[in-house]
Image (tube, rainbow over all chains, first blue to last red; front, side, top):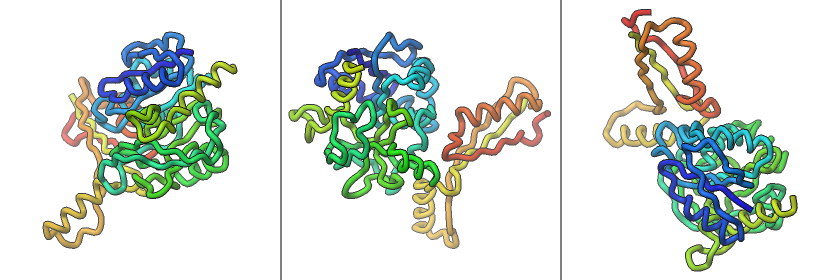
Length: 223
Length: 85
């Protein structure tokens, strides 16, 4: 199974995302922001970083990169897409996911190992977890506050589209402690924490993040 | 040549941490009587031609597509006074 990882100018975590794909047993395919072609991959990861210097708004310029047009179309057609951190911001800017990410309420960059609860396993990227499972993965962001209007938040809750929620202290002021969400179909997932940094015990606090990548691979094999 | 200005502000219900930081700094510097600061963005856009209704409508499209995120931001557009219309 081939999973594409997009590199934008300013992407940081594309290598780690590709590595996580390989550790999970998949083939990582490097995709380039300027190339309007997904090269037939079975799923795509939009990695963390600071695409286009985070100018204007995080993800606002990446959204219009040539690679995004086929990606948005494919995502609407059911292609599994995972946006991590800057990738989550880009998915919100692309309107593939509702809401937006704003500067942390306490105005400081936060970098720590974060405890999360998996709230939904009905997505392409979390099917391998147990409902309510608690995991620890790194979190690092300056603009990770998830916001949306009350109606959108109520919809996300009612439809079970909150995928992961912060436990302990809310690290960035995200409404309702939301760390990650999915679209109605469950193929597009975005989250601020970094599961790709928690796939090997040598370098991660845990290997709890691996489940995102094994979930999508198992789903693709079953399909 | 004309200049069109787009002002972008976070919606009132969205927290503005940058504005809060500025407000705090103002208080520390002794500027009294400030109850709130909201920080926005101003884009000054120079047009190759006059600011016709069509040209301004095109800038409005640009504002709602790229300059502002309608999920969290509002924007206003005006043609700079003195510019030919």
